[in-house]
Length: 235
Image (cartoon, rainbow, N blue to C red; front, top):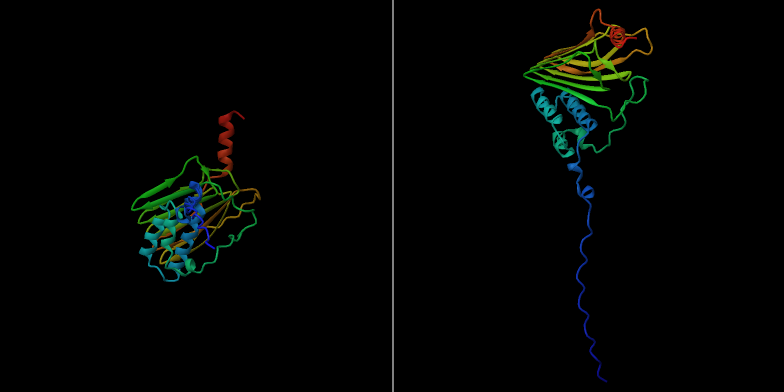
């Protein structure tokens, strides 16, 4: 008995690939870097220099690239050869040195960079929760005596390599600091305000063949600015 030959069904064309939205198509290395990303990489570089894994020149070059980086992909190569980056452990939340509540993650960050130059911030300006000051063969001056504090805790990360960072504060605030001088000077004149609601300025960082100095400016008080503002407004 002859079997009828069944006509072969034509092969179906492969289904077109699923459309991917532009947001889903962006690889991780192309994500825009945040201030927290840059600060984390800068901390890794600082520890590497303290351990002798990087020279002062190598550290200065990489830190400059850190604060110029726009994407996460630009940050990763800067620490790829360092043990902190290759451990694969996700960084935990930063410990709170003082009980003033968590620092706002979306607050503005001021970056003052002086490379063979100078950078100054003074006069009447609104202080953000975090300021990064970096000096390489230059000088950075931060004067908070007439500044407006919009939050109680202000953190200044100061790095001076063959340069200087000078910070001046009013006499009636709280000033604290933690840092290291490597063939240089890291000097924070600690203050404790009598007012429990006074602004708190914390200066962290290090100086390599340079200087970081934070101290009160005589005769300058936060209330002086408040009184001048009330007089200007007619109160």
